[in-house]
Length: 141
Image (cartoon, rainbow, N blue to C red):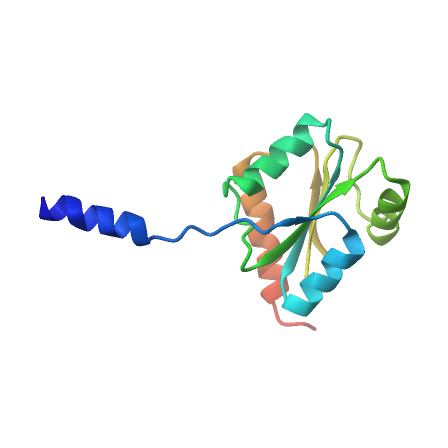
């Protein structure tokens, strides 16, 4: 009985890292990342895209390490011409291919640290995010 009570106490006091709230504007979200000194996780896709929804679900369910204490995030609509143009202008040198979503992990100033397109599983995203975090933490030359 004492063990059961101990386990219940532990389970009720454990806090789970929560996903950040999704923004929908690239510039505002980059400014927020700069103010809060956080990384950015930007998903350019569309509401009807299964790959896009699956990627966002991985974030929302905490299956990849995109947490509110370290990231700001944005769900950007590729069908909005202004949003698409701003995203492509900022990240035009990145090669995404043709399968949505286009995802960029950035430093706190919006500089791309990692990117990918199409559906990726939780293991792949975790590696991409950890690599981006390592780059962000590395001493600047």
